[in-house]
Amino acid sequence: MATLEQKLTELLQGSVEDLGCELWGIQTQRAGRFMTVCLFIDKDGGVTVEDCADVSRQVSAILDVEDPIADKYNLEVSSPGLDRPLFTLAQYERYVGQEIAVHLRIPVADRRKWQGKLEKIENDMLTLIVDNQPQTLVFGNIQKANVVPKF
Image 1 (cartoon, rainbow, N blue to C red):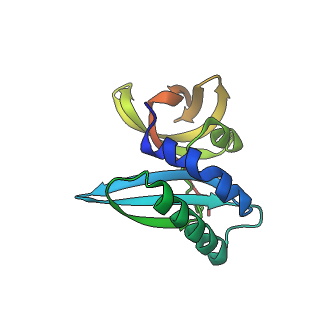
Image 2: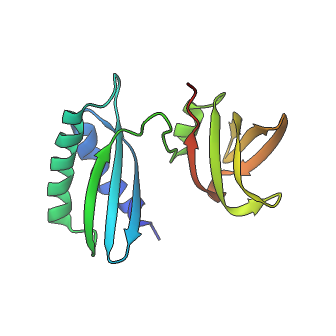
C-alpha cells in the first residue's frame, strides 16, 4: 500500500517538472486534526520565491480537484536547503563522499541515529564511515536522513 507521500509524488511530479523544477520530496506532518504538506523543490541555479509561488499555485489547484487529502491541511513549498532531506537512493548517490545524518526505524547496533561520511551505495545498502569504522545500513530501514552542511 502506497503512503500518502508516494501518492502525492505520483500526482504532482509531472506538474512540478512542467514548471522547470525537480520535486525533491514530500513530507507530511499531522498536528491534531490538521496536516502540513511540505513540498521540497529544486532546480539548477537554485529555487526562487517565484518558483515556490508558481509551484504552490499549480499544486493547490491539482489538490483542490483531485482531493487526495481527507483532512484540512496547509501546503508549504520550499527549497530543500543546505541540510536537505534525502528521499530516494538516487539522491543519496549524489552525496557519496559527504556527511549525512540518518534516523533508523529499527536500531542497528543499539542505535537509531547515525552520522558519518556516505562511502558507497550497493543495491539498497548504504555504507557510512562512523568513527573511522564502516557501518552498513539498509535503505528500507531509514526513517529519515539529511545532508550535514559544511560551513
